[in-house]
Amino acid sequence: MLDQDTIVALATPDGHGAISVIRISGSKAFSIVESLFKASKPGKKIQEQVSHTLHLGYIFDKNKALDQVLLSLFKAPNSYTAEDVIEISCHGSPYITRSILQLFIQKGARMARAGEFTLRAFLNGKMDLSQAEAVTDLIASQAEADHALAMHQLRGGVSNHIRLLRSELIDFASLIELSLDFSEEDIEFADRSHLSELLETIERHLKLLLDSFALGNAIKQGIPVAIIGPPNAGKSTLLNTLLQEKRAIVSDIPGTTRDVIEDQLIIAGIRFRFIDTAGIRQTRDRVEALGIEKTFESIHQAQVIFYLFDLSDFDKKALLAELHNLSENYPDKKIFVIANKSDLSQDSFSPDDAFKETFRISAKKEKGIDRLLKALFDLVDHRALEDRTLITHSRHYEVLHEALRAIHDIKQAVNEKRPGDLLSTDIRCALDYLGEISGEISSEELLGNIFSKFCIGK
Image (cartoon, rainbow, N blue to C red; front, side, top):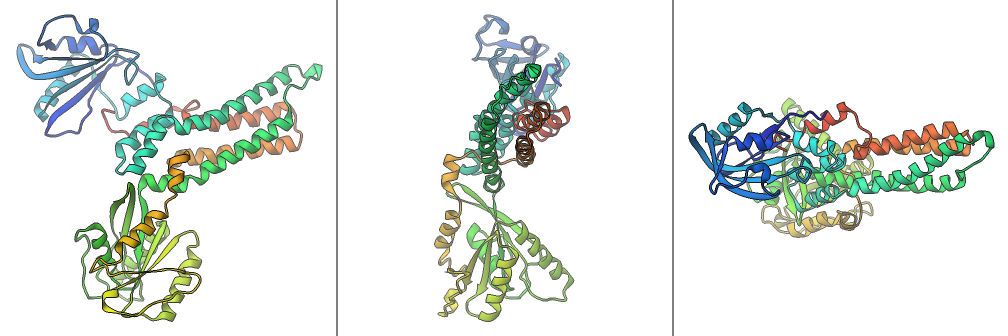
């Protein structure tokens, strides 16, 4: 996949700005820029300059100065792509950036494809595949927690964890292969009891990684919280209060919310996605019915459910029945029972043992909101964020599932005392799956799919 073209792209967002950065990488990068750049203080040619230095000068289009720029120079292999790289910081005029890009293309560069700079960094050994994926996560991070996860992965957290497990399995696979070479002499180099212990260790680690996906992916995407309940309970008012803006229409008329409204809030570095839904009730209104249908879709997708009811107007028996129905249908979800409109009623609601705590709030008066948000924040396993490697990519999750299945096949082969050649095949299969995480085993199709999701210029 690695061609020898010199590639160029705008590395900053397109449009007006104080500055823009244009990145060019490849064997002709220095000669192309040399033909268009004049330093403010004439001296050595670009090729003769020291790597990682800055140079002030002008980009010329024939005899016309196009812009004063700052040139950043990185010599291979000590650059992002491991190739010769130059970054041009110019003024952020669309005309200037477009003109400089056109000049570079006229001199022999071509426009980079999406993610091509990072793809070259991967193919040239500057980073492994999971680290390359972390680059997109880092760019997309919106809160402290998902930024921390991306940084951990960029530093090799996930791949280092997998690499340790894989190296031990490779060592044992080598002993199996050695035993096959000396099969006629009946010499056994591999201790199968030791392999059984190793497989137990690998299986335990893989299960921990797989279990971490629910938290890791939720933090990366934002933890979804569905706000549900009967009509006129104050769900839209609560969303507006949480966001501190009028995001949803509020009305005394039941059934005002017909569609799902979603927005996000960052609480102490954790991103939560709040989803306001249509009130749950029997209705003949077709549009409202579609909204209620979407409410149940939101419940299914959420990790946390805010069940909101009107403290000044509720039927305790019906409410408990609804809560138990939710609990039975969604046993894996955390349900917060929230008694709203406490400013209009002095009534209390004491749920049974299934719901030990009720949050008494007034969304309109903004009372009880801090306690509710603290309880939501406390749901997150903060120690796991600090101490554990978390899986955040569905690709990693799927590959680890296959690796775990392969480990089970090896355990079965050991228990059934299958011959070394069959055992060796099962081990190689597990090694291939583990190698897919870091990209030690990868296909052109896989790489194309991953890097196509990158922005151009990265």
